Amino acid sequence: MREKRLIAEEELLRQRDYMERVRAMHDEPKYAFVDTYGCQQNEADSEILRGLLLEMGYAPTKDETLADIILVNSCAVREHAEMRILGNVGALKPGKRLKPGQIIGICGCMVQQEHMAEKIRKSFHHVNLVFGTHAVHRLPELLYQVLTSGKRVFAIEDKEHEIVEGLPVLRASKTKAWVSIMYGCNNFCSYCIVPYVRGRERSRDPDVIVSEITQLISEGARDITLLGQNVNSYGLDRDDGVNFSELLRRLNAIPGKFRLRFMTSHPKDASKELFETMASCEKVCKHIHLPFQSGSNRILKEMNRKYTREHYQGLVDYARSLMPSLALTSDVIVGFPSETEKDFEDTLDLVETIGFDALFTFLYSRRKGTPAAELPDCATKEERQVRFERLLALQNEHSKERNQRHLGTRVEVLIEADTPEKMNLLARCDDNRPVRFAGDPSLVGRFAIVEITECAKWSMEGTVISILPE
Ligand code: SAH
Ligand code: SF4
Image (cartoon, rainbow, N blue to C red):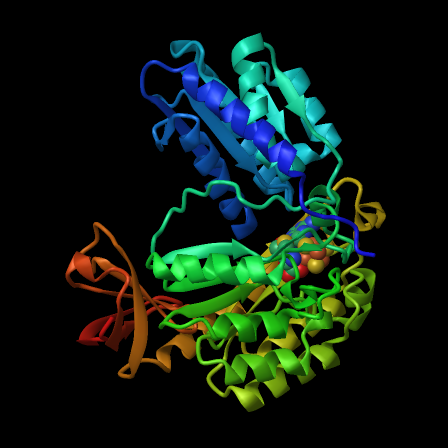
């Protein structure tokens, strides 16, 4: 029998009760600034935090001096992000002195690590609320405790086997929506902290996902991104037989014109069925983000990725045979412990042979508690930096060349936002490439045909040919 994975209704009612109590404490307008670091999963969590705060009487703001509460939703994937977050949290201290009573909170992956929560407790006394990734829904109760006790509140629980449905969400955009379809990760890639701070994989009920997305589309959303650390293993922890491809087919059947995207896909679980589904579902964008991490089979093994470069190449060949115009993006790590010059050359070679539309390149960052953190380095810091720049230069050539192919073509775009720039409208192609052009701001949310007139490394400019009917 599958364990009961939804959080108990009583717990949600308890939090509702706290929401009302916090709301009743205010006799003037209050503001909250939720600052987000890291991946789209964090962006999605921040939309829930803003939703909860709004219900408690805190309107959203980006002005730190106005905010009665500042919540920093943190990331732990690389040391660089952690250093930046700690620096920025430190810089909030003088502002708090000028605004006594301001609450400063840190939540998310960074503080889910015990040593980081401890560091905040010891060295960041102006932070009065700290909670981890499994306590997002408890914000009302935790905030109430801070407000009524005047003491610092820490909630870093390690209890993860629950999915919380029905929390309020304040979405940043009407046109684009992030929808988490699963939480956590079971893969334990040897360099990665995510499984330790996000817990094991938990997939949401497919019927709940379908009705949430149906609702979003009826409210004007036109670009839906399904989120999970490894969406290809969606449903494996459930017993209703709905795998990721089946979920895509069900979502594709929702009436209306809209786009479906998803991230991230792990190559070990990317199946032929997935690519066949992408090819046959007209609403599924012809773009896949498929991180390969390294082109060396030895390093892939050390990384515990469970595939070879040949397997990866086979997946790409099959996907491109079904979808010749498929956009392919990926993540790569440079300088993994024990990476030799030869291993790095294998990565360059894979990048050269496959030809990616864009690459997210990362210098390896040692994460305390992960198996790779115990391995010795092979290359010096300088050597790793040189490798990183060589990879970047190679990819820049590819990105430019692949973008140039669009010059003079007509593409269908979704207009996502009006911006202060001269080319004010920001739109996106099916393959996720941004296109800018000048136009009427009221067109946000509409599909249009645009002719591409300028191409840079990744973004493009164009002129409108026609606006598609709603
Ligand atoms: N679940 C996703 C990625 C999550 S983290 C996946 O498996 O594809 C996003 C990216 O950060 C990873 O793909 C990896 O390239 C990078 N990353 C993760 N841990 C890292 C580390 N310790 N050092 C450098 N890059 C890392
Ligand atoms: Fe990290 Fe690997 Fe899980 Fe991605 S699949 S979140 S890289 S452990």
